[in-house]
Length: 212
Ligand SMILES: C[S@@+](CC[C@H](N)C(=O)[O-])C[C@H]1O[C@@H](n2cnc3c(N)ncnc32)[C@H](O)[C@@H]1O
Image 1 (spheres, rainbow, N blue to C red):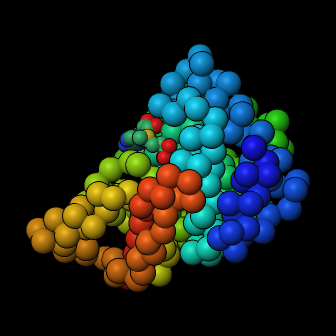
Image 2: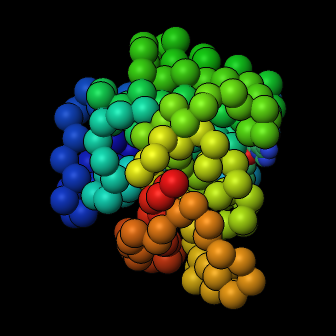
């Protein structure tokens, strides 16, 4: 698993140390192990989880800033926040989900991998009390653009970045959002399109900047 992860990341210009790769694989194995008892992911096949969870999260390293304070909204089993916290020692990741069992799993990962830059928090996003405290907010498989901007706005500092990860539905969701609402308080900065290495599944990363 480690070699496949290393090769796929290298093919995309991402070179992580063996120590970091080992931690990534350990996280994934723990997720699959805990998944037999609590519902963390619908994906149970290790090869598929490697690509759709770990590699999908780590391909972001090509596009995102590498240090600061990041909030992962609706992180579930810790995606993409935990792989990013493992890879980026200078990124402080606050990982929020409303389901206690999922956050307990994340706290277990924090403990066994000694991830001091990861803070798992059990809360609803609507109740997060962090006035404009984050440089970055990220979300994968959480909700529509409208909700994501509403939740991210109060917690992002001015000029902070919102990273929205989407699958093939991304462009039509974005068109629908722009068609009926304004992205008030945010400016579209970048869109990155990429493909997962094995399945060739299409992914988009939208980057929006808080403007006031
Ligand atoms: C589909 S899962 C995605 C999990 C993870 N981001 C991933 O990509 O695997 C969505 C997660 O968001 C959480 N969630 C949904 N609405 C939320 C809210 N308002 N506040 C906190 N967590 C929420 C759910 O508990 C669930 O774990």
